[in-house]
Picture (cartoon, rainbow over the protein chains, first blue to last red):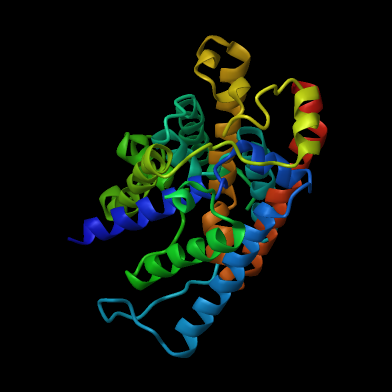
Length: 137
Length: 185
């Protein structure tokens, strides 16, 4: 039964990604050219509401549907890994115009060359795993 | 029906993304899509190559279902909820892209020069997509998250590391579009 919930949340997210054009390579390019407010509006409004949601959950100790406490774990402190990892991610994001959510949505939408991007992303993840202990974090 | 076929404006899309994050929190999970890439690596046997992939991938089954849903959502959106799906991007950007050789700018959802089926016979295009994918996968794990994990979940929880990561995303994106694109297209 719970499986259905995850699937439905995913379907909802996929429709939003495609219909908002956040899964369009052109929108990502336009964003990095600072030529449209569209992507900034999406991320900005998601953030404003996201911050409010999380503050409400924390303040009123809102529980999950199962009555469990919602945990927020702070991310480990560091600068290098976030900045450098982020830059590498950004280079790829701008090149293929898709991040790890939309790339799967685009597959469902029938843009089959995205399979090459997904394969690359799996390879990149694997390379990271192999090199992890030798990289500065 | 007309309304359904229209693209979602930013002020609807953004709140719906926040709602996705909220729904996942309310079922006891965290919104982060790139973790699925690690899970798939493990399911494919990467746990035999290094410790990073040694975890019970079946515990992440829920996130794979979210991912599967995102695939189905893309199918539904294109086939049942869309009219003309080419984004109305800035005309200046269209001209700029045409001068780089992207003739499909303004008339297609994705550039056919990179995502048309003809690219399967172009070594250069395949190479670009593959390298881009590798950078996304590698960078997401190195930074510990992607757009959903850092830019949405992390920043919503006011995490400084996520802010640093998002600044990194933008530095990388700007370097790619402004400095590297003129060299490769």
